[in-house]
Image 1 (cartoon, rainbow, N blue to C red):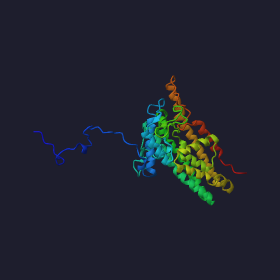
Image 2 (cartoon, rainbow, N blue to C red):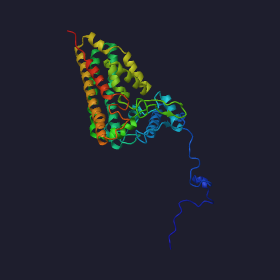
Image 3 (cartoon, rainbow, N blue to C red):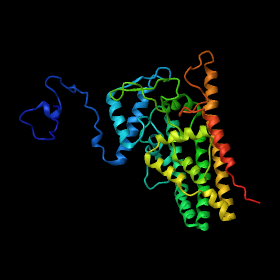
Image 4 (tube, rainbow, N blue to C red):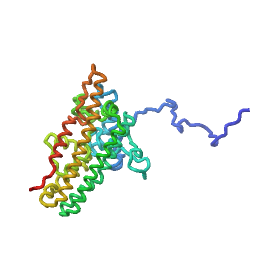
Amino acid sequence: MEPQRPSLKPAAASLSLGQYHISEEYGFLLQNPLMPLLDCRFLKGHRERRLAHLVLAAITMGFVWQEGETQPQKVLPRSLAIPFVEVSRNLGLPPILVHSDLVLTNWTKRNPEGPWEISNLETIVSFPGGESLRAFILVTVLVEKAAAPGIKALVQGVDAVLQHSQDTLLQALQQVRLSIQDITRTLAQMHDYVDPDIFYTVIRLFLSGWKDNPAMPVGLVYEGVATEPLRYSGGSAAQSSVLQAFDEFLGIQHCKGSVGFLHRMRDYMPPSHKAFLEDLHSAPSLRDHILTSGAGSCLIAYNQCVEALVELRSYHINVVARYIISAAAKARSRMPSHPSPHAPEDRGTGGTAVLSFLKSVREKTVEAILHPCA
């Protein structure tokens, strides 16, 4: 005899399909599955809006580039465009994936008490690129973390100038140098974890925008928001506030073309971070203070900061040469008879001529080294 299956709960007098979310008319089908527009009013505070911007941006990039760079989507559906633009306006950010999404918001620790190492970090949102994408994001997270003591030291340095405290200023400059050197060491992990071919052929595409991009010359229509296409730059390291903060504190003056691009990238930063850069710019001149104070130890420490920044920018040029210039040449060699009409290999995801830009900012950094008056 077949054993009876035990009953886990008392028998009901009758069954009701509704209690099982089953429809008499549609059966197991979900009736009218199309949901109303996402409502940003339910987001509570700055942190939730930042996370929402990350998620909506990642969905947008995946949608636009789903068919590759030769067939980008031209219209963002209203169900995505309207809430994305709304949360972007609330945050003061553009409706596209930016550095503050991909990196600043997109990390979590596996073990909250564990070390700041790539093995103990994980991304929150991802898209094609596998382990190379994960590492690209998380190494950049570690770069931002390495910058944190230096950013704190900038504030201490500004206060020291205001208070004419040479000892405090010297300590702040020494910490800035150490932080910049730590950034360079951290950036080197990119070579350990990120495959240049995957970065160039896969990851780069999903970071690309619709401004200064031949693949999308007129931009992207945000349905329900504007009838004309809108144009926004893709993700760029220039959207990080770190190097611009060091430049402002150290008083490094870039050429007109570079300044224009760097300042435009500030519109892709959280407004509070942009305001921090502007306030650093408005602070008393560190260079003037050092030259007029006669504090030789501070002058030496200042120049060591600048030299460390030159080394970082030189290393960044080498990274870009490997992951964009060399990778582009390798990609072309694999399909010599069908070159891509939409991927100028010397341009970064932000749309700038990347090598000439990086070399220019490095040269201007070298020029910032102070020479004591005879």
